Amino acid sequence: MGYDLIIVGAGPSGIFTAYELNRINPEKKILLIEQGKPMEKRRCPKDRTKECINCRPFCDITTGFSGAGAFSDGKLSLSPEVGGDLPELIGFEYARELIEYTDKIYIEFGADLRVEGVEDDQEIKEIRRKAIEAGLKLVDCPIRHLGTERAQYIYGEIEKYLIDRGIEIRFNTKAVDIIVEDGKVAGVVLTDARKRSAVEESIHCDTVVVSAGRKGADWLKNLCVKHNISHKAGTVDIGVRVEVRNEVMERVNNVLYESKLIGYPLPFRDKVRTFCQNPGGFVSQENYDNNLAVVNGHSYKNRKTNNTNLAILSSHNFSYPFNEPIKYGTKVAELMNMLGDGKILVQRYGDILDGKRTWQKELSRSNVVPTLPDAVAGDLTSAMPYRAMTNILNFIEALNTVVPGFAGTETLLYGPEVKFYSNKVEISKEFETSVKGLYSLGDASGWTRGLMMASLMGVRMGQILAGSIGKA
Ligand SMILES: Cc1cc2nc3c(=O)[nH]c(=O)nc-3n(C[C@H](O)[C@H](O)[C@H](O)COP(=O)(O)OP(=O)(O)OC[C@H]3O[C@@H](n4cnc5c(N)ncnc54)[C@H](O)[C@@H]3O)c2cc1C
Image 1 (tube, rainbow, N blue to C red):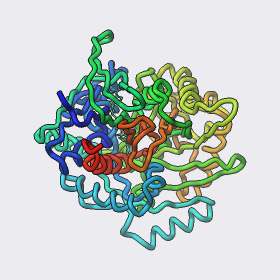
Image 2: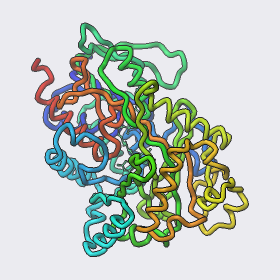
Image 3: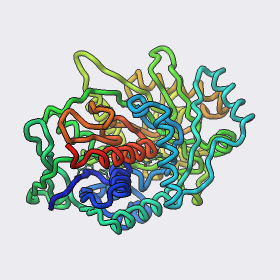
Image 4: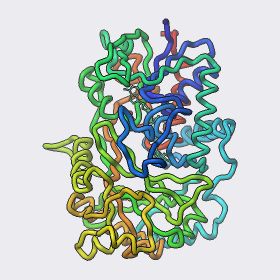
């Protein structure tokens, strides 16, 4: 076919690579490979079935055009301090410029013009004062909130735009391997993602971008080992999704929309942070291919609940003799899934302090009605490692100073919330791996962990490739 570029994974990082390269160099032939479905065919059947039915071959929440972006809350974090380590590689000021540029693309495709968390300076100062009192750092981060329904519309428009501009997208197609010859990439091996023993097809190309997301992080790690691509173990984030009534979070929700708070609680002093806050939102479940059920959260722009949810994540590093963070996070999640009979576990904060499990009937008496109805009441503490649990409980106590009522007895903790972006691929400033012509982007690369950072990494990739493809 003579492609100039093959991109594996149509998440934000992959689609913005295609967008930007095509904008600068429309004559370049781009093939985008995606194991899931087009945007318009992605559905989560849970609205109908009321509980997760573990869709096969993939969960539509994380797979398909726009990747994990489609069913996300669509919060674009407009600060280089949030969303991953990429600014350390390309520089904070440059990352800021790219955020501005990428944000404009989102606006062109229909994003809301309103930016949250910038208006009420006096109130922000007061929240910061409380955070300092509690030993926490409040990170400044303006947010453009797309909302799940708007995010799907915007990504749908981008899909149409790319197809109209001649970019070939192969859906339901999985990359099973990359071809490496003499230290250079030479193509990809593909198969039909819907069939178990489908025939494999090799496509040759000397420029390949792997942007496989968290979903593809494990696959990418195996590729690194097989093809000797330099990488290192990173951090694994283990935590819980916390849900409280909107009344408790009202001030922070109104002033900041999302409070990005970081602490290093005693006795371990590990980094613990809030992540992905959803005012009036829903707690959700995502399923990974290895049958893991993990918790997440999102919110619609117009459809609101009485609750706010956010994640509290504790970062864990390893060294000798064990240094496999993905394996560690998987084991913790598996144990929790086992106790929940394959479902998400939920426990009240007060029950944890009282040393007892939570029962379903106790949940139904609470002010806080779970927005994930098929979560199973139980005991998180039987599965959560002591260190992570202690970090989370001490952080919640500190957060109670900033948000009085956060550490209430009825506050719900759901688990497992585990972030599998721990394998970090070693890349140059041009995002090239140790294999020539092979580039690694987005959450799978370990350099990003959010929509805006993944998108801008894609934009930058498009610009770099526009200057380099065919010129070697
Ligand atoms: C429920 C939920 C809510 C979220 N909310 C927010 C939010 O509000 N704000 C925020 O900043 N971030 C949020 N995130 C995180 C955000 O969605 C991700 O950081 C972002 O989508 C990462 O982009 P990416 O391009 O790296 O990968 P992804 O979006 O994960 O896309 C990767 C794509 O690659 C495909 N793929 C993987 N392996 C292969 C293969 N071998 N062959 C072919 N295709 C493959 C996958 O199917 C997927 O479509 C949320 C995530 C979830 C799940």
